[in-house]
Length: 216
Image 1 (tube, helix red, strand yellow):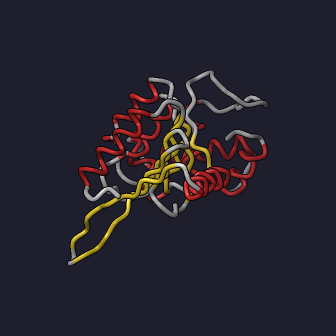
Image 2 (tube, one colour):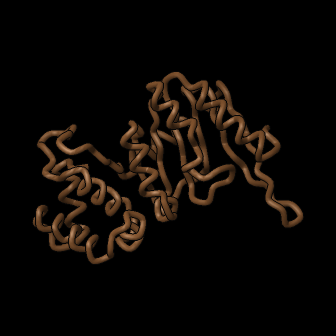
Image 3 (cartoon, one colour):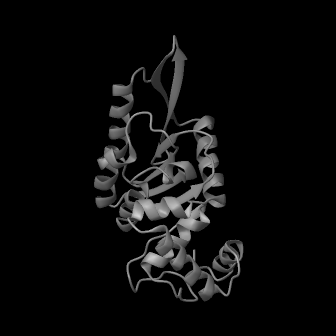
């Protein structure tokens, strides 16, 4: 058991610094130890070739600066998906150690603690939980111009693909506009363009077409 915010932050740093192959991450809204943009250890680990699979809560993507922050991570190699709500905060390094931040309330004060879980049936259950959430989560993709990874070829450029993934993940157009520094009208115009490409009359039809054509 990690008893303090400082100890928890140090463990988050240590797990990522020592990871050799893969980090699995549940990112919920409302940080306990640090905001996502302060997680410089992830950038360093990605640079070493460590694989990151991260699932974001939709509410977190709506927080100021998160859209650009997630896009930067994806460009460096992070695989990102989004769901409406995550059950817990969690990090798993190399499928060997899981870190679950906990929050205890006492006397009106909130003091973060965390549990470390190593090789056990509980760890296997946590890995299975992550994989189950990953399967049902919506991919968030941001590809460099001219680079596509699926067939048939996706007709969208990098900006359009990222916009579509945010829409399908449930991020409001107003939030997208604010975080990307665009007017709401510009975002809406780009959404209508995507709908025309898909032959869709509604955003739901757009999402269905994107799934059928494997744009995401």
